[in-house]
Image 1 (cartoon, rainbow, N blue to C red):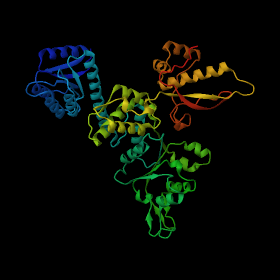
Image 2: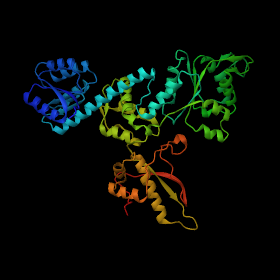
Image 3: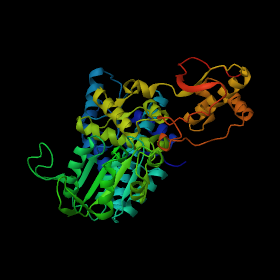
Image 4: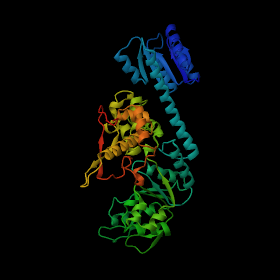
Length: 502
């Protein structure tokens, strides 16, 4: 059997050490024993451990003192306190001192194994997160707070490294909250301009005249209130990078002037006649379909193709859910540090909710959920009660609103069509796992499998709202049906079964 990890057991009772050694060894752990706190400390200094089980009541150095020393040696080491003298005061003291969990004698074997399994998994995630960031810094230099190990994110990292050294314009596309500005900063940090300015322009938040004044500056007397000359953001970004956030919001009358700067690398201040040359790297970002805007006449075609030299597509979080545990750990550490709440972790049930949710607000929404949980947490473990309602709610599906036309409509066809769409939507929510989809629909897996065969349902990838093929939450809009108007969303309440077996 492959070893699951190394465990330090510190207990002054011979029989308890033997019981724990037999239990943990049989489970596949490599176990080292110590009969006193000082002996356990020496072992921890000599050998790295994945977790420690420490008795509270020991002669000499007691469990709390041992815990304190173990955390000094390895702050990431999860320590499980175990004692026959259970009390609220002792538990609180142990948790405040940094204990991972607290188990009382006589304990159930399964209880110890579950706590230990969760503890070693947390230690693994922390180490993996740290190693990932270190590897990224070594391979990709300065990547800031971009966290991810999924294939989609590795493609993003590779594109950043390939594109950063050039002076080409880069367009970053992705839904709101996916981290477009972080990618823009990473491009700047990995370029030869990294020691120069990185200037952010909040496109479209200002009227065209004021935006142009901010971009290009103005001379004295250019307009009412222009008492002094002013440098624009392009001048401030000279030899550096300028980032246009949500460039699709820029007014049509401003777009030709922006195009000229990109093409000629020069501009004039408002009210001025002098041409000012700049060497600026332009990075733009958008959460809308610029190509569609171009076709509708709301975005200039020549500007679109000038921006579309190198394109980086940021995937929504629902399409890279394997990154969620790393992101959760990153934000737990970030906000734990800010709030002086170290060694926090999510319970398995809370993490399951995170993995099941589609995250329409992407990484930004996940970050907000974790920050809220850290602030409100009263203990070291964050449970489902601290997860917002929208994350805990059941998945939604699209229910068509049916209007019967004068010529009538086939009841059987409408019901069959709805059943098929419901199953397809639920399968997408369940990531294609039929067992999970059956649980969500409150039907047997065999029943669901029969219906999948009956309707010839094929697996399909989720489509994001960024490409115009889905709703804002990533659920694809169903095709129209005769007599069916636009869909509205309804949820399946907990405990209510959907009768689709007949």
